Length: 76
Image (cartoon, rainbow, N blue to C red; front, side, top):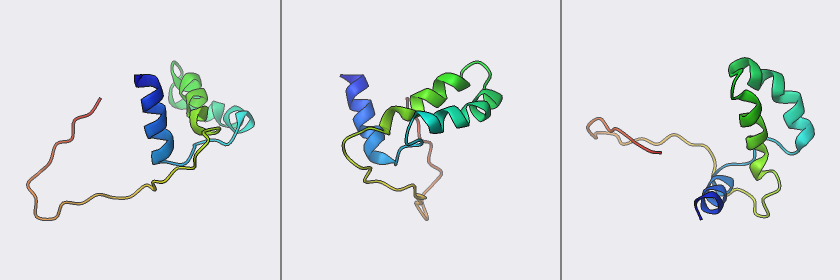
């Protein structure tokens, strides 16, 4: 259930990048300029959360660990 779980986590973490297909179409040139090979796919994949039934509960924020030794975060 990776695909369903991943979508649920991502869509609840942050607000959607786009609110519909028209917004994606408008942004396509920037995506394709940044990545000629993958840009178009990434742009359309960003629409994934636009129609998610629940609003995102997270907001982007900085995480700090003052006084901690250097931390390496590894994820997939």
